Image (cartoon, rainbow, N blue to C red; front, side, top):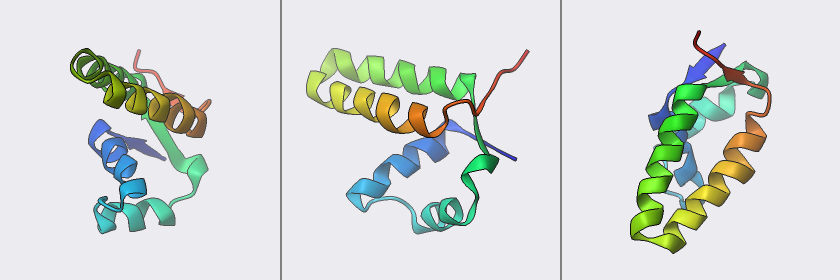
Length: 84
């Protein structure tokens, strides 16, 4: 099981732009999806970052919100770890 931190998720977002670190991309490609999890804290940090950007740049904020909802949340659907 791998609990991914915010910096890893943010790096993976860069794959579409061809700007992601190749070590992260290769590692991600080598791991089975069912072994990957997110903490609710990571989701909160992503949400907070997007909200900050939305206030300054609505177009970029919308792009990031779409990424969070359509890619991150759908990929990790049911694979969230809650810290109690």
